[in-house]
Length: 446
Image (cartoon, helix red, strand yellow):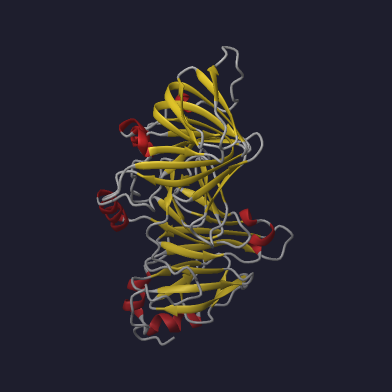
């Protein structure tokens, strides 16, 4: 069991420095990096050996256990170019670091506290070979260049999470939908951010205002919104979340979607039920309105096919407004075309994607705020992406840029938009978010 560094330094001071130098020399372990920045009282220890006080340019070896004290931290620069900031009050081990063999691997362990990571050459060819294990999960790089933070939640973190959850207020930047069923390849990109990158969607992933969602062949995604609206984006389709306001202070509840091409199956939530005019599905041919309903809509940009399987919907274009009652279908050609409305044939072919009313996901539970509990692993992705796998192997999720994942001891993994990122995004930075500390050690000058 690694010793407590604070007590060691304060109790023994210079004696420890001299003792460390005087110890017998054995076969040197493999050098895997060095300290590029140090602040405060920190040490590294090989199994069965005396601890070494860490200073700038101190070598770091395979097998080292690194411990930092309150208001102290170190930055380790590894031989493959990876950098890891070991945060204050942390306990971190380098179990295996191989940059020489054909199958380069890094196996690191975070026992306590947190680290901020920037991957190097090991992750270039096989990102998953760069791994950080915690008491609840294993975090693996997923992109060849990734920067992510791994932290183990303590009591302060748990209390802060509860306070944040209790005071949470919905804004236009909040999550507007989550994926509750998915098949194949579906992605999203936020058009409001010129620097945004495409995000692959998977089960539980969030969707935001101004997101454009695209589904590939033989793919679909079923989304649920906080008001209970559910939509299934069919294969080969493009959907824009133009505006979604729900329970936002001084904002009227509304949902505005645009189906550019492809198909959409929709079930009305409370927004459309309470105010029919607050819902609109726009297409290049016409706008679909509802009066509390379930519909199927598809378009190629010129023609529009629309049917109502529950309630009443209507089509509005330059030719006027036309009701499509329950059990009816319609075909419209062009923005000036008058819809041809007819009873839906009993044997009419149905889209292969699931109708949204068949999904029983409860929006109250889907959007329930779950603050991290003490002992949970928190992963924030700053650049690139990382994979979080529960230790029981039952759950795995990908954390994309600006997302946070929480992995509890029971194997549950949840993903939200990034909230608290108090670690510097660049591990080579001596970021001011770390409090100033007295860098001198009693009886020993580094």
